[in-house]
Image (cartoon, rainbow, N blue to C red; front, side):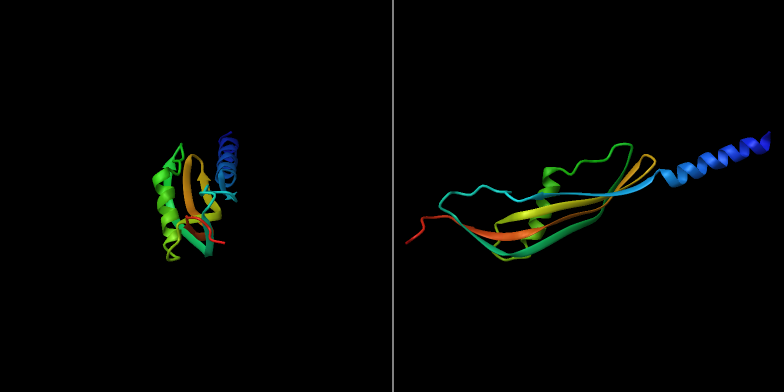
Length: 124
């Protein structure tokens, strides 16, 4: 009888050890990310990319990516191109892992086209 209990415990533990670990990658593409004045000129400056690795680990509930953290990541990306004012056609990807009730965000990546915006009347 002890052997049966032991085998059941081993089977349950092996199932939990292999079946409760998951890694997922999710993302979102934003093609129209900003509104500008109708008379402004948007000049693309090139591709940029910024990344946070090992953003954090939480128990039971995963922390949301807040506005200040998102703006910091945007600023890191825009700093790569002098004169860049906004990021257009960008994508944000996150890679998360979960083991039982422990959530870990492995990385948050933003990449897109940095652009310079000049407002004013167009001369013909």
